[in-house]
Image (cartoon, helix red, strand yellow):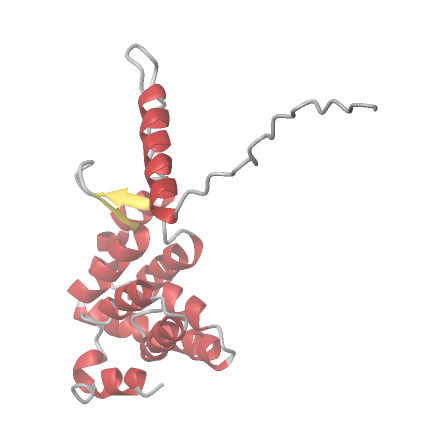
Amino acid sequence: MNTMSITPTTRRAPTTHRTWGPARSLAWAAVLGVACATASAQPGERQSPVFFDDSTAARETLATLDRLVASGNELEAVRALQRLLDDEPESLVSRDEVVFNTVRDRVHEILLDSPALLERYREIAEPAAASLLASGRHADAERARLLTPSGYEATLRVAQSALESARFGSARRTLAQLEAHPDRRRRTPGADAARLAHA
């Protein structure tokens, strides 16, 4: 009678893969981020300097503005300001080398502080702003010709587009620019908000 020997075999447990939930993944990402930041700031390691994108041309233009206005050359003053808005709105300028503002913000401040210069600016800049608005270039009109009537309308449309895309923070920042706009006081209170709400 033949006998059969059976060699016992060891069954290997199935390999399992660990799945991390979103919370644990985010926690590890935070730990790695801190570790990388710490490693990049070791004592004795030379840090990269920070440079401001300040504009020499803008400083020089703004420095001559009072002279142009005082001499009655408001047209040239307005053209100079518009060139800054067109060419380098995001460059930085400072009056005290401590606080820096964008060229765009500084130009708007100058115009809003001078009713006569603002009126002249709106007269000259409005035709181009209206053309940009009519051609659908709302962001361009808002960026470079905000303080015109068409710039006001373009800004509302830029904000409306941001709302429709659920970019609520962007919409809020865009609309905040209209707080000091010369056309705002001519509008019916709440009219713009109602328009955007029903867009």
